[in-house]
Figure (cartoon, rainbow, N blue to C red):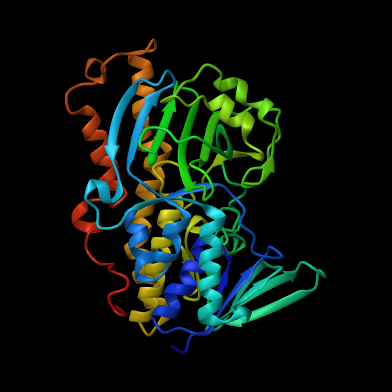
Length: 423
């Protein structure tokens, strides 16, 4: 393929896009990354089967399996550990592909290594912060600040893909007056630590008391013992005077600032407050998203994918999942349509309406709303969820979100619709 493609951001979306583009025959690809080097930062994420399907088609799944845990089941609970709802997940539920719990940084590193092996070390330019994008006729120019010297460096191509996250500079070109991402009044504290497993050893728990919430799951096995790397993320109302920076995942905070909020909680034998205190590094992140956009592209040579296009609340394991699917989709349409403007139009027609529905569903807490409902109806706990919920109510809530997130078996168990040209 002849298009020169510039990708802003070497995160999960940007690196997956480069791999998918290469699979469709594109080899003139440059990824611009503001960080000075690619480091395994971040915490745990879950990848749903329809994202794992895309990674499998890109021949990287086998590299990820040793680094992760294949999630078997998900429990919704109240803070006392009373079980509200249980779902079998991944291949155990009948999907052709697993659900993966994995460290975000480890996934990013594997994607990066794969990109370098296919496109060469010079394909990823670190220390290059994209600060603006300009269109000049059929060409697009990514204007960068070289972070080591402060000098301006321009990269010109046929297309600039904005994969630069919730604080995307490329998005500002499309919606210049948007402002900072809005917060819903909650903050997320997160961390990870080695410890004993719980339930099946491949279980995920989402629990809350109607105000506070915690997500807990193992994401890796230790090679020299039977311990697992436990990932947790806890949400509490934001203290208005705390002054946390919106849109920054890596603000360190001491466990003493939030762990007491979860004292007394017991989830399948796990005490979250103890887990938090034992975590070597803990971070805080205000819960923010972005308003849905009517268009993710401009001038036929600038387009957004991932969080830059549709940042959403961390509900339902859809953040990284949908970024990966976006990356496969944009590569597919660029390979299918000779004219860029036709490719971008087809990509948006496929993805934009779906993601808007998902963003709005996550603002309503998606399937996690069952926790709040349980607290409202049974604040002192319960022995049987059938005494709290109407017959079929829990299944209906689950099915509705399954459809919104395109997780129906009939869709997911088919081969990737975006890799059919190269498989």
